[in-house]
Length: 399
Image 1 (cartoon, helix red, strand yellow):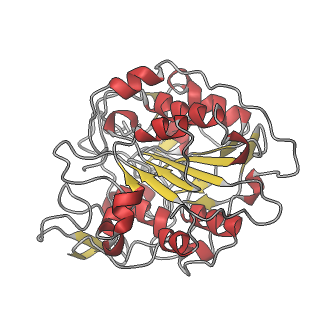
Image 2: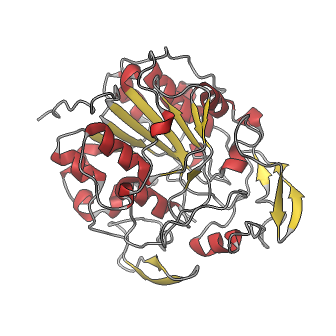
């Protein structure tokens, strides 16, 4: 049965919500020097000021970014422990990506809304952040799972560490959970949703947050709504198909994850935005672009503490819609659970009773009274055809 048409709450013209989740960058690293935003050109390492140096988005070096590492970087709020002994050099985390490699991101941020107080929801890596994106919680999981498969298809000896006191990890559990998600609420109201994600080379798993939710992984939703490869989103939009709620995660090459050897992440995101902007969906869509965790890079803003899981360090946020405040830099505190809050408020739904209850719903980023702006194509260096024809590189975060 096709989904029932559910209109947004009074005053909202948004009928389609799209969340694009990229990987492992801080605000100081990706939007350094953006006009009106809070960034710095110098950081602090163990009490000593050092300049932030330019490092390409395609740089082959990666950085540690576990929950345990987060506490070292944070250093009791001093924000000066980011140097890593086995990095080359140890001060590599004190870097920024040159604007010349980020033109699509900066163009969108200039034309629409940029958030410089978006914090990752957790003090740790990607697996946990993606759970907060769909559930406002992670079952107290603090790290990435021990194996390469993240979720209910993992070998029986796979474990994910739980959060302990004062920057410690506790003995792990199998990474397959049964807590409710926003997808369950959407299903109950027959609101359509899709989750586009890359698969591993052997097709053993799909990097969808829902793979760790037992009743979705082994239910009808997995077959209907979890779509791979992630590039299918471009074909679906072209064919006039866009779910009312959509999540999109990239493969490794297009993820912005350190160590990819590629700087095509901005072009990948631009291809999605351009596809929506050139379609019938533009006038009814809100697109949220963010990054799941800090990836080990320096950021100077001490995050607020709201519970034992977070908040973590700042990550960028770009909000693209004909109804966003244009040329606006939001200094309001946001985090990934707020995507759930926005969905709930936009469609008049009940809440999950998790972090979504306290999360901000990005309300300062929108002005629904303004005349919807026409879409202007986002320029990019790499075209859609090349992106579609490149060899898949699998899920991005396996560290």
